[in-house]
Length: 156
Picture 1 (tube, rainbow, N blue to C red):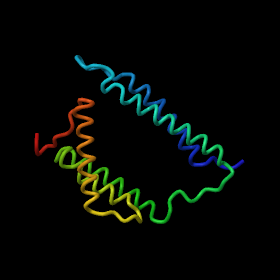
Picture 2: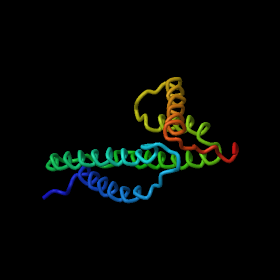
Picture 3: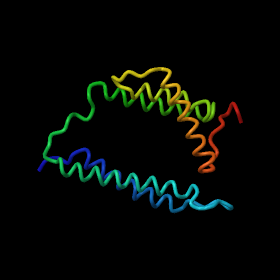
């Protein structure tokens, strides 16, 4: 029998993660004077989406188990993943120093350019997308979920 496909393995790991985080979110306390579903619903929605995606990966991996796979990392793939990981760390540091509103547009811009691959990306379009994504995320968390976003050390 052939080795299981990455899709199958990823799906199984996803379902294990869903089970683990399900038990973690059971302890989320409901703040006083907050109407349901509120922030408590979001983790459940995320877990359902991840579970469905994991099941789809398991099915796909099982159906395609006889097909050969391409190498996991194409040439230069490890460099790309390392660069993306470093960008995430820099974004986390920038959030603590500058806050969400200043850090997120720059991070979104950097992530778009990091993930574009061989595609041509216009600077003006990327700037507009970065600003719109920041505004939508801000509105979603502050007004929709009533979650305070980091203001940063410089603006506290």
